[in-house]
Every structure is written in structure tokens, then in C-alpha cells.
Length: 326
Image (cartoon, rainbow, N blue to C red; front, top):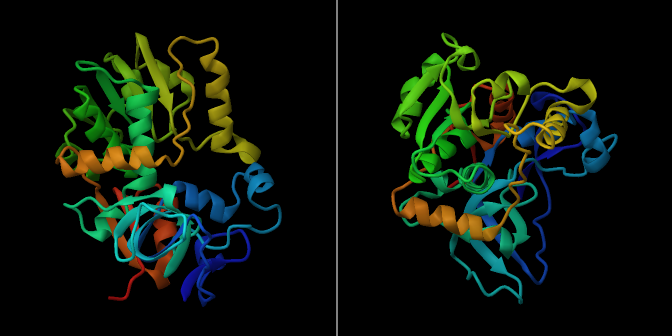
């Protein structure tokens, strides 16, 4: 089978190559999926580059243990292990795996869910990681209530577009923060108000919000908390600062420490890959409450370009990799 393979850390066009490798063999509780579409996001880019360096303690000191990039996928069930009862050969599924930029993947049945009936397989590839992150950020970490004012930075990205829609479904008044070119996109997914960060700095304004979900990390935590109401909370989910060694992880560590002493500071949350969350997203999608926002789609052979777009910080919605050749 064809797959994108990485043998060393570095920039996408230097380390990613299309190769022919063996098809994976499934275990008793696994599903073999013929991948239709994969999606890439910031986490894939960080792991590809081995940055920040502290990540290499977990994912390989000198070279990545995870050879194939990508976590999100959609596709067809090709085979199931003897202990799998949830799926049958031919089912359309979406979910996560360890290396989705390949023609076939073996993954646990617990990491998959049936494709929403009202989505194409291409659209479904953009659900899992970003959708679960937004769901757990808004529903679990922030516990958004009807009538609350919610501000979401990075509102035009993969997590941001889901978060806007989920916050609206929970009854919030939502403000999205994005660049000029994405203002209409953020409005189109349901934001009540949109702030163009190239023209206005929301941390210096007078408006205060009950919940601030930070997907961008462009301001310090202290600056972000200026926009939080006295009884509100800042929920961090990303960052570009933190130093050369810790990178965004440094920001998360500072947020965790601050959360113990500063009332406005919420602790970082762990999204995880729970099947019940994927099923909850499926239900919301089929009800017409939310839908994935798809940006650029690249062929498998051009996965490096997809990664470069994500690395630029200017990707709109989900960036996809078309794997199937049908």
C-alpha cells in the first residue's frame, strides 16, 4: 500500500515522502480501514518537526517512532478482528488512528464511529480530533450555559469553527476572533459577533466574557484574562509561546499553575479520543446543529503541502488529504 512516511524530524518537504509499505495486520479488537480521506492539524505538525524538543522524550529522541503522520480519518471497513462487534465489512466510518496518511490503517474499534448520514466521507474526515476538542472544551471544561457570553480565538480554524457552533447550540452569545479574510466564514457558522484581530485587540476593549476559549495563543495569559468577566474563566487550548524547549507546552504548564491561584484562569483540558464523544458529534451533525468546515484538500502525494499550510497558522477549517483513488 502507499503511505506517507517520515524517518527524521524536520520541515514537511524535507522529511515526508510517499512510499510503498506493507498493509497493516489487525489484532483481535481492531478494524482494518481503507482510508478515503485523512485530516491534518497542529498536533501533526508539532510531532513531524519534533518541536518542542520535550515532545521527543515521548515520541522518539532522534527520530519519530510514529512513522506515518495523521490522526483523523474517514473510510470503509475492510476487515474486522474476531472481538469486534460494532462494525461490519463495508461500513462507512470516521475516527482516529496512529497514521492516517496511508491507504490502509489498523485501529481500535473504540476509536471509530459510523459516518453521519448527512455527510460525505470527505467531510467526515474532519470531525474527530477538532470536533472532540471543541466539544470537551465548550461542554466539559467551560460548561457553557444559555445566555453566557463566549469569546473564541482562532475561530476560523478546525477547533474554532466547531467551538463556535457548539457554543451556539448550548445557548451562548458567541464572539469569534479571526483575520479579515475569515470574518464572513466565522459569521456563517453562527457567530453573533466577529472581531477582526488585525483591526482590534479584544484584550484592550471594554467587553468582558463569561468564557474565553483560546485556540490561538497570541496573547499572554495575563492579557487574555483582561477580557474575562469577574466570575468568568479563560480556557487555554493552544499557544505559540513558552520558550525553545517547552514551546506551547510551557504555556499549558503556566496555565495549570495559574489555575490554582487565579480565579479567572481555567486549567488546560484533555480532549482524549472517546467514542461516546464521536457519537455525540454524529448526533449533532445529523440534527443539522453543527457541520465540519472544510478548507483545502490535497492529494496524498502532496501531504507535505497540507502540513505546510497548517504550520503557517492560516488554515481555514479542516485541512484534508485525499487518500482514496476512486
